[in-house]
Length: 149
View 1: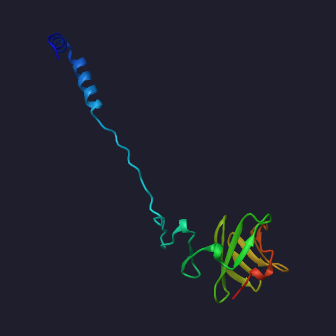
View 2: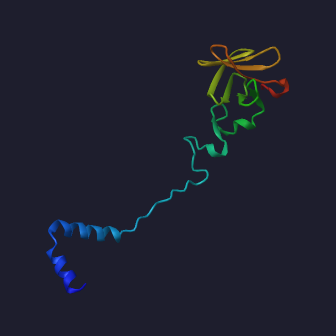
View 3: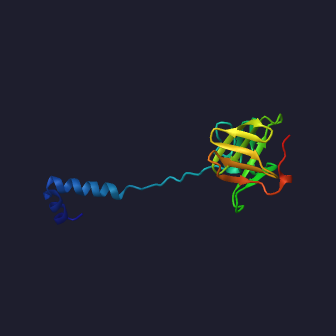
């Protein structure tokens, strides 16, 4: 810094000095951005089921399972969505896994399982899963796919 610049610096008012030093301070700051990495399998639920791997809790089996691997599959009318059924070993309960949610159902009679919001019933040759307003959501089109213990 030469003499003329030094004299100008000394003559600066207090406000300008503060602005000058703050500017110098910011020029020296280095910004950092943090990258968060999610580990595979870190999305376990309260039961330890890993949703990113397709696992969900089965209240009947008391274990994590992949509903899309169950033997009993139902389809919507255009076969674009699947609902899966898991029956208890004693045949008294059924759980339905669908895009609408999870439904734990109790046996009402030989051909019907009920839930407060839905019903699973045996049709003439297939299982039908619907809401309580009797709008058919899912059914199986191939009878051999459904099995009750």
